[in-house]
Amino acid sequence: MKKNKLLLTLIFMVTCSAYSQVKESEVFSKNLRGKAEHINFNQTKINSDDKSVKDFLRKQFDSRNDDDFRLDARNTQIENNLESKKYQQFYKGLKVEYAVQSIVSEKGNLKTLVGKYVDVSNINTTTKLSESQALTFALANIGAKSYMWEDKKMKTLLKKKRTMKKRLITQKQSL
Image 1 (tube, one colour):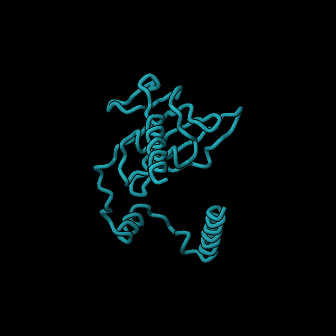
Image 2 (cartoon, rainbow, N blue to C red; image 1 turned 90 degrees about the vertical axis):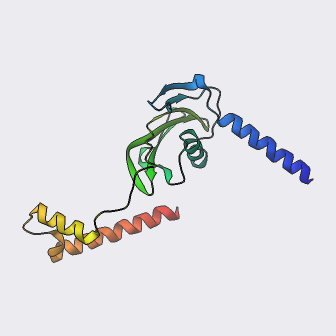
């Protein structure tokens, strides 16, 4: 029984590995470092669920554990049996600007991937200024006559907006 489970697991892993390898003929264009920026999936079968897509992106771009690809739910569309999604790259929790992967899938499998991956693995993300230093610098350079947090009505409005935003986030997470 254990041998059968082991054999099935091995066959499954080999099959998944074989199907997740992109064929060279499916790569439409590459960046200067030789990484694919446009892939048309003809033979390769990759599920369009969130976990499969993230695993594929990590493997495709040899990304580190500090890299993450987050689904931008605002840019998900379904039309004519095609589903379009966008994944934003993050590094150590920070958004990597312009690093977006656009994915089109059909019948649960990826059909096209177009986007840009930015290798930021050697970038130091440690802050140079403390929060109070940054605020002092900003206040010195903005030169406003008054600020929202100084006005009681505006301060109350800001608190209400933050509370509403937290509730919305909590509601979305519970769905």
